[in-house]
Image: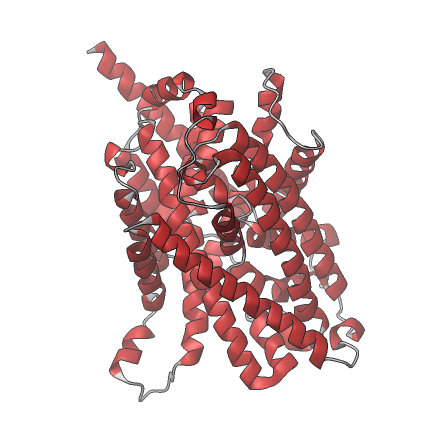
Amino acid sequence: MSSQNATAFRYNLGCSYVLGSNPTAGLRRLTSESNNDADNEATERGVSFFSAVNIVVASMIGAGVYTTSGFALADLGSPLMVLAAWSIGGLLAMCGAISYGALAQRFSESGGEYLFLSRAIHPAAGNVAGFVSLLSGFTGAIAVAALSFEAYMKGFFDQSGDAAGWQSLLFRPGMLACLLVLAATVLHGFRVRTGMWIQDALVVLKLIMLVAFLLFAAISLQQPWQGITTAIPRPPDSHPIVQLARSLVWILFSYTGFNAAIYITGEVKQSGATVRRALWVGTLIVTVLYLALNAVFVLAPPSSLVLGKPDIAAEAAGYVGGDRFKLLFRITIVVSLATSVLSLMLTGPRVYAKMADDGVLPPWFRIRTEVPRAALVAQAVLAIAAIQLATLNDLLSYLGITLSLSATLTVGSLFVLRSKGDEVAVPLYPWPPLVFVVGTLVITLIAGIDRPAQLVVAGGTLATGIVVYLFGSAREANNRAK
């Protein structure tokens, strides 16, 4: 992974300071709201359990699974170790889904980590999560998925020197990625149900295509899979534990999205209970699918064919079924990445709307009709700026550590709630949150020590929320003193 370019995200920090903060007003709202009122609301909401599961699946299956294992194989030197790393990532994701599900049922409103941490710990902690979402969880993740979409889409076009003028325009760096973000903005800018219907159809299509790929691989490759018998010398440049942690950071990023449905809890039928089940089911589906896909990616072809390759999925598909099958699987990847952008563009603006409700962001970000259009447009502008200012490698390096630290803080809030006497229902407590917090924190810190620049930038992003909170508190104190 390349080191993080800190200047690529300064524009986000500037936007955050311009938006301002009103944490005291937010705290008054948070403490005055009744959770029972949220649980007893009428369930005439537009997002069903099926759609909530699809949001989780669409958010998780994105760029990471199609790129990560080639690099992990180069680091770990063994296909079986790569699969073991994906299994560890799946275990942590399931523990995270159980923990987030408990929080979603306890706080049955939209808002995600921002809402959870504001209520469970302190508004300053909520600000940290909110600005991580703004800078990383949505803006960065949308840019990663959109840039990966562009990379795979270009394989369908003639990129020779005599290409048509419109193709030359499409080949400009970031153009296809920006067009996808704009399309998602238009799609989700009218009615939630319309956007969800299209997204549901695309997610089902994506799953059908991925399962078809797995079935074709199982049927057509009767001979022993080459990756099993291929010997790969382990890289000698660092300790095996460090290499495993480095690979797991990328893999944890691939599992990011297991919590996606929490951002629209207030718009889901039966809110918290439905979201909790959607997180479990969606994460389990994706974990099983990830293990099956990566078994094909690293075990079927000779290791030399996919070692260190960023397009390991396409290379594996070509080995399994030839050029035509490689083309079909490229279509699958394009559909998969498009649904990731659609899902993130749906969920992200809901967090900003909740922050506006609490006075952290300006009031025009609130949901005034069915859709938070101002927040949606702001999300599109930030994502397009990220696409233009940062490379795919920079974004991947930055997101892996930042999102892991934010998720660790969120799951850790369960222990705070319990210590306050709040008997929030967590299955098998304390094991799921404990495994997630300890496992994710150890992996992130080992990888961060190996790549200190990334850890520093991630810590800076977390600190942004605290700085904005303190600035807002000081400003409100001055206003009261006048």
